[in-house]
Image (tube, rainbow, N blue to C red; front, side, top):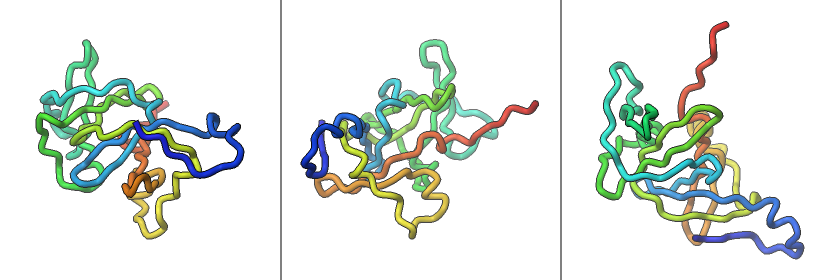
Length: 160
């Protein structure tokens, strides 16, 4: 576990602004999600494909009796699709009432950071990139992007 914080004179605010993140790899790049949205991390399980599903959806798996959609996060971010290996994992996240899995290459770290370390997504990034990346941080020589899990799946509005 890595704890990183900028130098400060007043440590009273550290606990309030600290957040924990789960870092993971997609290819050679590192990303992370807020640990509060993570329900579990499980090994790769073959998903059952769904007809006419978006290209970034691998399919669904049975998670203790619940149908769980699996998103290939690499494909969703515009990278080549993930070829699952023995190291691949599914990070099960909850966004509001929606539970879904993120297929990634491997979990790399648990980070404890302060909000000051998170920099905004650079203006050079496309609007689509800004949709999926909340910010970027440099930690121990690594560049890690914070994924906006609430934007990974399309938003569906109920028809009244």
